Length: 208
Image 1 (cartoon, rainbow, N blue to C red):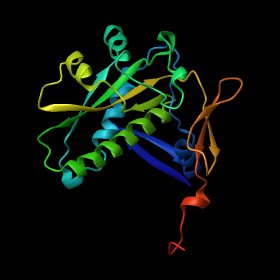
Image 2: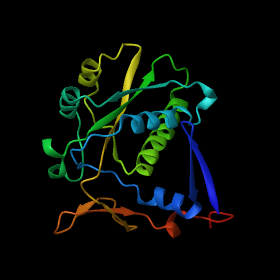
Image 3: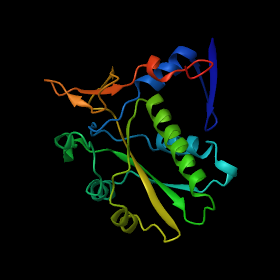
Image 4: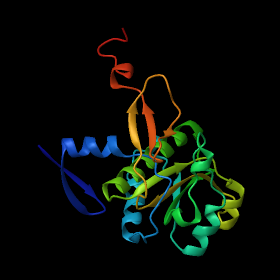
């Protein structure tokens, strides 16, 4: 069965298996090819986020898209990457080629709903990016104050998170691993990412 997806006025046909694969194979990417990204693809990422569900339809999020080299290189200094593998941080020659910065309007009346909005919007961004073969990494360990200053974010907004984007220069591998949560590198520097098996998280009809 083919499923019709519509985003930013464009129509795409994907099978249910292709959609499932898109979700399963998306991994956080921390090393990127130094190839420019199509600006229109990044705008479509934000458009997909704009169309995501929003609690009470408050829509408290806005976005800054960064592709300009000088700003990218400054922003890169204010980001912190693989917490379990500090040595795996991207070098200056592996840095992202684009960023989407998620902003939250401080006037938002419901903090909890806003947190849900951010999570759903981030998922829309990275999944559309994956569909366009663009790697992504959601970053929350960031220097918020310096990013606010660099990007001239008004006091009425706060930087919540940063999505790093670029064509992939690595291929992390998911592993069915119930006991371990720490991702790790093998002898050829491929990252392995433990994920709980479906059988360990799925309860049908009742919990037991």
